[in-house]
Image 1 (cartoon, rainbow, N blue to C red):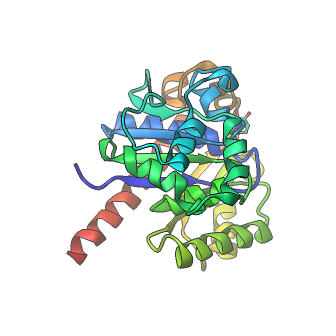
Image 2: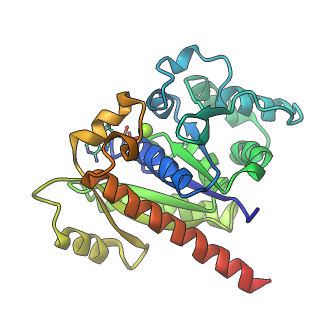
Length: 272
Ligand code: ADP
Ligand code: MG
């Protein structure tokens, strides 16, 4: 199998569509025949809920437990925390155990790479591993970025805060310098674009603001109740409304994600 790509979906702002995007990109990659693992790295467990486990905090086996095993030096063996989703991908649920893990990391040796060690122990079975980050730039997000080949940044179309982007970029750059030299920015994409801001010049404006520093993807995800509905529908947008414009948009995003993966694969092949 070709080398696994590990992708963080991150933005320190909440409610920008990270978890929704992780679910739909994951489902779309699985539909294109890729082997996919989604990992809920947010103590709120929103992705876990979207994937049908409505009470994440009652789950006995989650990412938090798996990270605790890494911290205690338990050798990786079976992975009972990995579950299968009916849309043909696997996922690791997350819940508030992760908050305790995050707090405890302060006293742990190699605290930035605990999640990477976990991901390394499971990734060989997958083409893509997607990490759904919590809205912060704290230790769990640093762990996710340290484990990743690249980061995708959803940005709410109405809220293009340059200082937030600068802060996120600063974190990415310092992780790249100090911990994970292979980390790249896969791209920024606009989410929740409505009639007023769903215009081509919004993308142009984003490119003007940020394009010098980072790639801006072509896909714009519209604001639609269809996407809000998937958090309780137990279906990705591809099954919920396959012929709608939200499904079209996520199809486009999946294609761009595949292209980023292929470009990087091409480059590493050239280097050999
Ligand atoms: P984050 O993970 O960044 O906090 P979510 O994916 O949980 O964001 O999305 C926040 C809320 O907005 C959720 O209720 C979700 O169902 C809804 N939502 C996500 N994307 C869209 C969209 N494109 N249009 C309308 N609602 C959306
Ligand atoms: Mg989320």
